[in-house]
Amino acid sequence: MTPCRTRFLLADDDVDDLSLFCEAVCGIAPMMECLTVENGYELFDLLSNEDISRPDLIFLDINMPSMNGWECLKKLRISPTYNVIPAIIYSTSSAKKDIDMAYNLGASLFLTKPEDFRELCSILEILAKNPPDSLLGGLNQFQNIKLN
Image 1 (cartoon, rainbow, N blue to C red):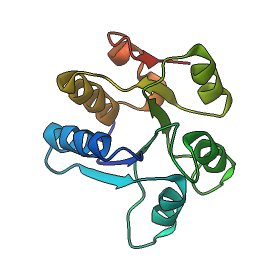
Image 2: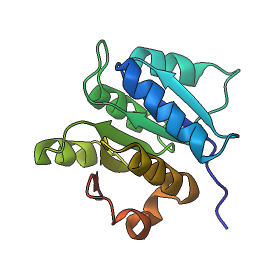
Image 3: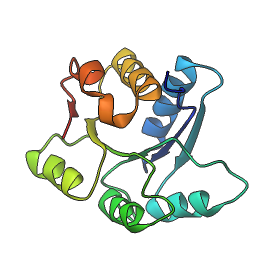
Image 4: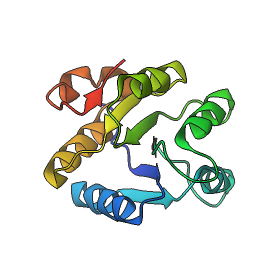
């Protein structure tokens, strides 16, 4: 059995989205940890902090100031240290060009931010319990997830 992921990291400059996301993560299981940063520079500062355990999944909003989601994804994928961490583009976009770009840059998944809190909780619970390469069956019910 695959161990449950316990540490999610969201990079997003929208404070409301950060709060809602962490509320959903903590609602799945109280022992899960939700880490948040507001841009790519903060993301890499956090990842390089040896006092903080590495996240099990990284969620990247596309439109962030300073270093956006695309730049973060590129930097994650060229890093021998961080390229093994699954990275999910988590955006309000559902444009085909963005989905294609995400997979071309090495995203594990493309997730359009759900409008329904219960749906967000369900998606995060599936992500917590399944490895990224076996998510198709569990996530195919959600229209806002695009699998490669």
